[in-house]
Amino acid sequence: MSDLDQLQERLDYRFRDLNLLENALTHRSADGPHNERMEFLGDAVLNFVIAHEVYKRRPEESEGTLSRLRASLVNRSSLAAIARALDLGMHLRLGGGEKKSGGQRRESILADAMEAVFGAIYLDSDYPTVASVITALYRSRLDTLPADSAPKDPKTRLQEALQSNRRPLPAYRVISVTGKAHRQTFRVECAVRDGSETAVAEASSRRQAEQRAAEAMLIEIGIETRSGEHTE
Image (tube, rainbow, N blue to C red; front, side, top):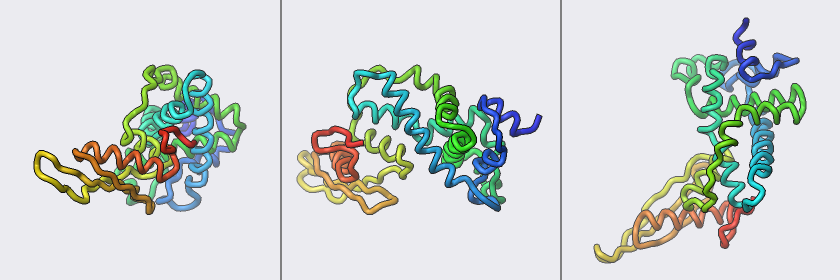
């Protein structure tokens, strides 16, 4: 049995066009066609499948809560964990530098390849088939969705929103500290590393100022409105 036969058994899906799977497993550091376009497609398919599953399983939840639940399932760490369970890393085609640096174990490469595989399955079959594969791989996570629907703090909401959109984590920086020791005001900036968005907020503690800056950033990038509702 070939390596790709083993992977297809673990996926519980057999490709008609094996070139699609090989493409999905090829990192941009390797020669030839790579998996970034399939990753783009797989990301869209995955988000829709998980959104539909969460929508069905939580009929009473608000849009904001559904968005947070989806983000917690499709983030990079969840994708990488599923990829590791499939031993996806051993099948990746990497350039020499990535292979030497342990790219087959890197979370970002595993997550991207997992999305690319979903894209490849969709291209090789149809939506119901890829939805079935994704749902099976996510079943344990879907079956154990957190029961508490209370809103998470702004920093957590921002992190999950950025991860679900494949963007880097935000950076927080103290711009100034004013006032006497027992009555200080912290001014904090929140910035998204891959864009020009910034948000600034003040509070009597650094932690609270960071939370307020994160809340302002959620509004700045269009994830939430000033009422705290998600706009997705």
